[in-house]
Length: 460
Image 1: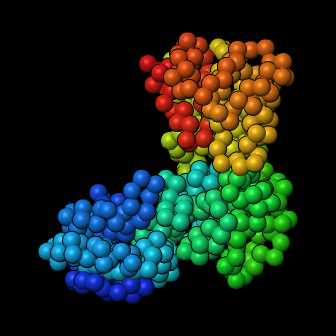
Image 2: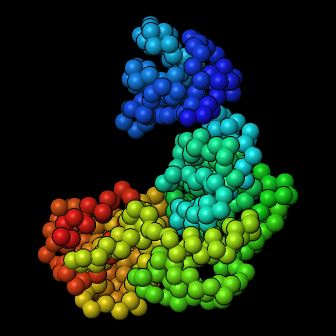
Image 3: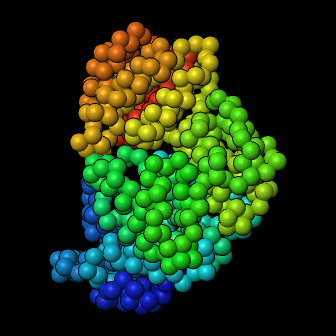
């Protein structure tokens, strides 16, 4: 593996000073001591269950080349950690804040590379769109993309270290859940192109309102100086606000705006047939929302130089990400879309399933939508009303927040089978009793509800 930093360079960029200095170079950066080894720089971060400083000895024992230590903790740790580092020939760098050091190192690393940086943000669809952009661009030139959803103040820096001098493009997902976070992410990635998928209500609790979400997302353009490109969905209600004052080119995408788009055909669970530039592209991800993701990715990639062949090849080879728009066949057919949920993504799935012809029954299992703040009660009631009109034969609602959805479902006069519970064992038993091989089961809920646990209960 090639060198990321000389150890002295890492210390200087991180704003640190050496407690112990050795000559080993840094080849990779890790925050999990179990991933440490020769060439690794271990950055100890506080977590919900533990603090990385408790695992410094483990990182050193595994052969880490260097470790960061928060300066104020060193007096307490010096004797034990210092002895281990000295014995192992590792460097110890004292920094004011390890997280800030991680971010500074990532920013420095990216800016010294000749790579076109792309940022993708939005309330829904950003991970899928990021993957599609990277797949199109990567068909022709070396392209790096943030893995999974490494999109946070910790994840984005870690993704940055995966970008090397061989890459022509680097595609980053930028997800926020608090005010000011976009400034930090955009300041690290310094994107030359940014695509905003949409402005919804994901994380509306910490961000206060949909207007607040739009305001924070727009800050992805804050570093533009006139040479960058901003990509926005043509039908975005906040389009005028987002595009106003952008120092760079604003490019819309969507059925009316994407150059060469000639229409589409809905293939149900088998995806969408996209007509573009005289090509017939069989795009396997279902639903209108995924069509928009494809059009956004296509528009941006072509603007950056991608060919027709790269677009067709990447879109036809697309596969759903784990827990997102997955179709599981055999036994009851399952739509597993429970990686996350908010009112917009929940509504889009209900709208997709409503006209879907199906030989058996349609069963919805809907889990709570989290992080909605003051909007929680009202948004869950709305989803209850919409679920009642979505053509399901059975609706199972799970989680404390879904109690209001159940009340609204019943108030509308829904005549199918409906249950609400906050007990997972009860939900599991209800679904076991209901699901038959010919049925369609839709699983949708926030990540914290872990609805994917139900799949093994109903499929052979």
